[in-house]
Image (tube, rainbow, N blue to C red):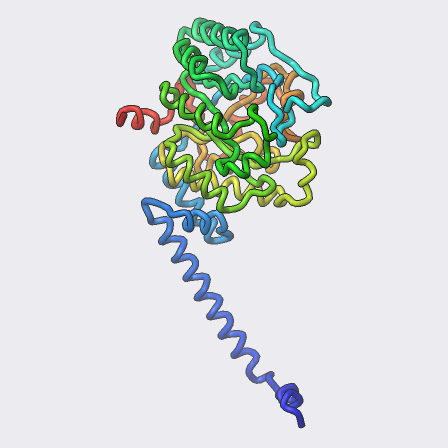
Amino acid sequence: MLLYDTVISWDFSPYIFMILEIMHKIDTKKTIFALMSISKILEKDILSREDIITLLSSRDKDRTLLFKKSAEIKEQIIGKKVWFRGLIEFSNVCSKDCLYCGIRKGNKNLKRYNLSDEEILTAAKFAYDNRYGSIALQSGELESPIIADRIENLIFKIKDLSKGELGITLSVGEQTREIYQKWYDAGAHRYLLRIEATNESLYRKIHPENKKHDFRRRMECLKSLQDIGYQTGTGVMIGLPFQTMDDLASDLIFMKEFNIDMCGMGPYIEHADTPLIQYAADLLPLNERFDLTLKMIALLRIMMKDINIVAATALQAIDPIGREKAIMIGANIIMPNITPGRYRDSYKLYDNKPCTDDSAEDCQSCLEARVSLVDTEVIYGEWGDSQHYDKRRKSI
């Protein structure tokens, strides 16, 4: 009889339960070891690149430990609080052609708009009357003396109508240092300029190859904003085509090393009228992009305990309570949309943007209710500035 015939003829049944018990013990030991490893990582003051990648890859109980840690830090440093930034998307006209963006210059299917000064000031007055501490003026990226003067005048008028009480965040893209200084002197004090990807190679894959979309210039703009004195914010998209865990770890390390004061980052959600739609089949499922975004928020809260972190609207495009989940594990800023309703459908950076039919009043009431469900308080009448900013400026 051949050897394999002998092996096949053996009766293993008496040993099955013994083998299964040994396998269970091995699996249990692996689980305990993994939990111990995650716990040890979370005890560190400084996370290595390998630690960050391990935590970004965490699942189940490991993921729960990560979220528990970030929630504890948020409660200790920030408290169970959020601040509103009334978002005014005042124009979808853009000179750039970013390959992922729904308002890119090359999108011929988009109806363009530009709010009048009166419409912008009416929205700002709503924010002031409803005791929002701040507003955020956001638009497509344009550079011209006319645009620069208009924004400066709007800042003056918003400060005037609110008796200097409304804080002003700008998110209007790359400009010269002189223009940034002009707006800062007028009264804007926060600026969000998302880098989108800190890996230059990845950045080039999601932007056209030309001077208009220069990685180094965007970095220089961030540095100018910080040097002038703005509370400086940036952010990235999570789940992009070609993106790796190492890229995401680099994003977090960059934010820490650059010493940002605030962050707005969210899941990449594809738009049908963009070149990157061709890679839709290769993307992570939406639920995985959502989960990865929560882990990025949790990690950033652990790494930079006292910065402001936005609960991005894009999270709600995937999960109906996406923003609330972000608040629970680290985010402390929400941006209710107070743009006049008829324009909101035309400011779609991505498909399935939520809350485009809500009035400003409805949006506020809805968010108040949602925030209260996660045992968090909306703080009215305060700017809600980054604690990190004050400490950073004092150390200069």
